[in-house]
Image 1: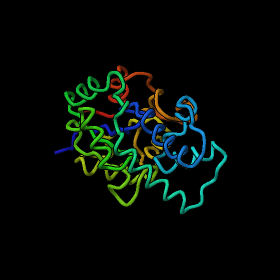
Image 2 (image 1 turned 135 degrees about the horizontal axis):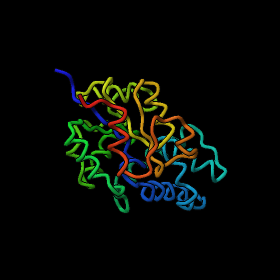
Image 3 (image 1 turned 90 degrees about the vertical axis):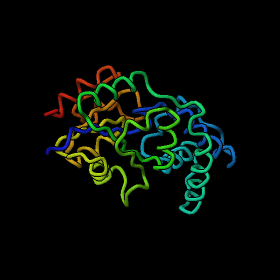
Image 4 (image 1 turned 30 degrees about the vertical axis):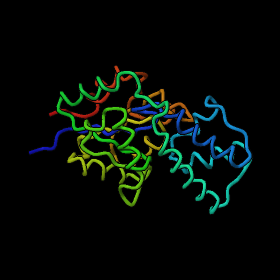
Length: 225
């Protein structure tokens, strides 16, 4: 029997607006190191490639390059602090719950593939009330590889019991688009997430501006039968 179609979602900037808590933690590290905080409006586009890249980009924005050992120390500090402030201000984007339910009712399996750590991803999605909708929630540390390595996506699909030939990725950044393309899987990009380049310029198969448009975009790319 054929596996059902599957929609795989990024988390930060795709399912949830998490910038406030991510940049809040980055600013804690910056001030500890004697640097100025970054305003959210400026720092939002630094998100999208995981916490380690966010730290590097944030410190470079303040004119400071990080040695490898210092970067590792700050990364550990970031993960610890952020784990205690996952949802101070984070919330689902409008229409997420309705879109997930509509896809599920149409027979889609749902999964999450994120470069956030698995434990923090599960905790955040539980707080936001949607963790139980996903057959798999796979993070940076779930497998030996992570996005943009295509195996992060294909292994997530396998863990959820899906078939890559009937899969679609939904994300907000170059990382998500590059991962899906490398895996040979169509990708829907949302315009409201975290990217320093408009997603329409990165070659996704479809672009949506609101979750109200997700169902039509996904079903146009993945056959349900």
